[in-house]
Every structure is written in structure tokens, then in C-alpha cells.
Image 1 (cartoon, one colour):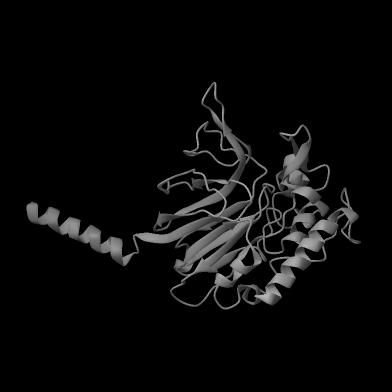
Image 2: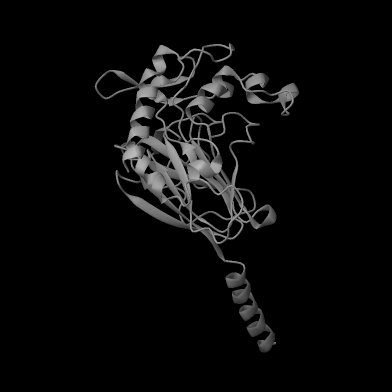
Length: 310
């Protein structure tokens, strides 16, 4: 009996190392001018990471190890605080409803920018994306690093542009500021704002043949061409990699893209940013640039200029 137990222990250790017991390391970095509280939620059937919520001050990083075949998502919470009377922890955007800094199985309340992963999936590939389907609250960049073999569309993805200030008025989330004024802190999806099947890709619109991009989803797509803008935006928004680690950066600088190997911008066939954003309110098709998008255009041009210098 003892020999059998020893054999099983050794067999388990062997399987751990052969299968890559730690499937990936996620390194989360905060380049924002403010504190971000990352949250994580594991998919069904996969265990939670060593932490499900923590604080990242400006310039800080933290690495988390994920087990083999882990799936889940990360997001950034902003404007968080602890109530001095109740001890309850809440966030202005991305709150997970746990009442503590740890999300403990709670997901992000929309709107929130999401980084989604399925490790060692079909064909042994990692599948990942940055999604604005639940809206947007903070710029985010995902860069794969150290892939073990070529193949797949192993490229950087994300949404580099700050959309909060130029969000369409009927999607904008505005909170009171400490100075008595107000500020735009997040941008809802059309589904969250209006709840109609047309925007939520539900009911009769629950398939890619009937659920098409709207002017609202196109607002997100124009700004962030590689990010998911609505539920069936798969073709240009899902990326694959073999046995990589992943750098997730909030408020990424343009130079942080250089850490991705082999020019990810060219590899993906899509830019990470778009200098020709256009949006018209309602369901009209996007056409001429909206005056309110001028700050984004200027920011994009500044980012391109910075890229050319590095």
C-alpha cells in the first residue's frame, strides 16, 4: 500500500511538471496617475488565483501565477474607498460587490474594461481578448511575452485611448467630484444603457446573423480596433498564443508596446489605436468626425508621434 501511495505522489508531481502546473504568470502594472484596484474572477470549474483583488498605486506592479487550464478575467476598479463607519469597501467603477478589497467570486459591475483569458484551450492555445462589451472605465493593454512556440495570432491587444471624456452623452457615467463639480468616470455599453435585445444580442438578436454593429458599438471599435465592441465581434478581437505569460497594463504608455515581440501591431493586422474616430448619436451610421472626439484624435496623434521617436 505504501508503495502505491509513493507511486501516486510521484505520478502527481510528474504530471504537474509535464503539463506545466503553472500555466501562465500575469503581471499587472498601473501606469495611471491614480490608484487602480485590479479585480479577478475565475471561470466555472477553475480555481481562484492567490488574490482576487488588491491595490496598485501609480507605477506599481504585481505578478499572479495561474494554474494550468485557468480561465477568467481581470479588470481595474477606480475611485475606491472604505466607509469609516461600516468598514465596507466600494468602488466608483468596476465594483465587484464583495464589500472588501478581495472580490471573492464577484464580477465587475458594468461598465468596466475587461481582459479575458482561457489558458491551454483548444489545440493547446491560450485565447485572450480585451472586451468593451460591458462598457469601458480605464485604458488597458495586454501583451503576451515569452511564448514557447510560434503560431496563432500572438499579439498585443487592448484599448489605449481614454474614452471617458468623449463618451456619448447617453452612455456617459458621471460622478460628483471632491471639488463640488462632476466628472465622467466610465462609458456604458448600449446594452447597459438601453437594455434592448438589439443592443444586447439577445432574443431574436441572439446570433451573429441578426446582431450587427450599432453606431454605439462602432464608437468603441473606431477608438480601439482590436477590442471587442459587441457580443459577436470575434473576427478582429480574439487572439491566440502558445504557453505565454501576459503583461496587463492600466493606462499604458505607447513605449510599453515595445515589450511585445515581433511587432505585435503588424502581426495583428490591426492598429491598437485609430486616429479617424467618428460617431453620430442614435443608430445612424458613423460618418463625419464628431467635434467632441477632437481630444481623442489629438491624444492618438501624440501617441503615434511618441511611437516614432522610440
